[in-house]
Length: 51
Picture (cartoon, rainbow, N blue to C red):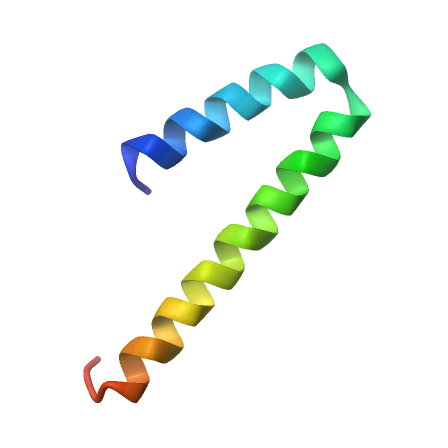
């Protein structure tokens, strides 16, 4: 986890505390985007022949 991502997650956690359910939905979307990016990176790495 990069420091920028960690900072973004901390800010979003604070927003969740202030704004409630809407921010929770935003956190879930961010987590899903992170998973998609990770899976995309893994498949790209495998296609290039490296592990």
